[in-house]
Image (cartoon, rainbow, N blue to C red; front, side):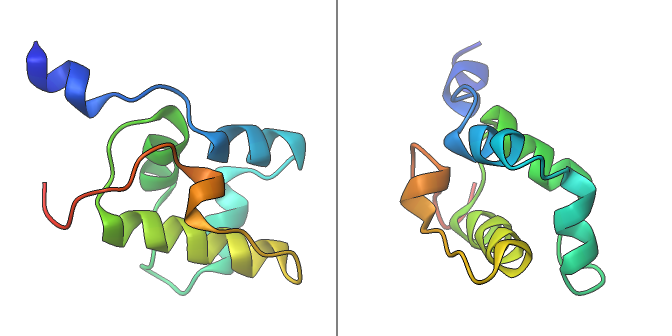
Length: 86
């Protein structure tokens, strides 16, 4: 039970940004190189399932590639900083 509480951090600002700008998970997957990121990884990030720093960076990179020239920082997308390894 404790692990579940620690792993679920609630809906993240990423979700609000994507909803406001009508960006779908598929949009980010499509703009990223093949195999770079999956729909499931983006969904986990949106819903607050804890991601590693590396995965947070991938989500950020995909969003920035899609939103160019607008640019985001990780602090705008997540309320926490992922650990190197989970």
